[in-house]
Image (cartoon, rainbow over all chains, first blue to last red; front, side):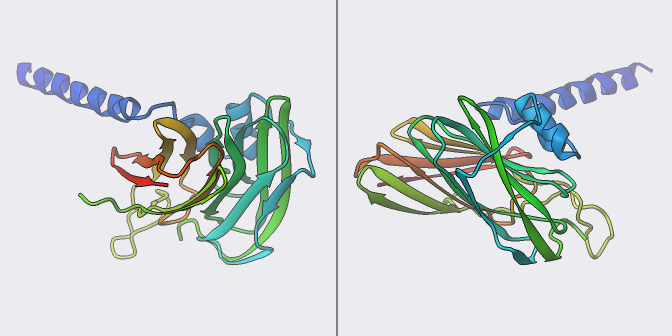
Length: 150
Length: 103
């Protein structure tokens, strides 16, 4: 009886230490809840407080029309909007729609490029947060081979 | 351990163009091991930070939807030749890597 209690305590402590570890490593909080949402609108509400964005033609989202391999889809986002605070990539039909969010300190140009995975043909949305609100633009990418598991 | 980040920088005027390639499996946690049929646990980069002369120029939050061996490019203003650019990342299992380069 006594032994098992001791074990339980030890186990609990180890778990707590594990849970605390990644948090201590991160300089700023990684938005875990937004990244774990399964609906694009929920993810955006988690991240920005709203899923309402203004469509803008000042954002240039460069994605391929057809991605042969969904595991590697190059994405480039640039914008001429002023006072950009963050740029996010949302893939509507991915199991976890929020792909990435880049926080841009003043001085960093709103010009980012990366490669994402896509499970299936879907709209890819670039969400740009500026001082004056949320702006977005989206484009459909056709995927012939999915890149999420399988 | 030698850094496994590959980095390329280009300076045009005061704008630095940074391109980097990180070496990471980026497991989503949804993929099955072909041999055992068991799910491969998620293992992915969560955050990438870049500083130039200790001033943060980029903070990127990654999810599992970033491709294997992520490529990441960005630009920032106010760079000068001789500046120390540092890029580091951490993953969800506590792993990390960093590299330092001179512009």
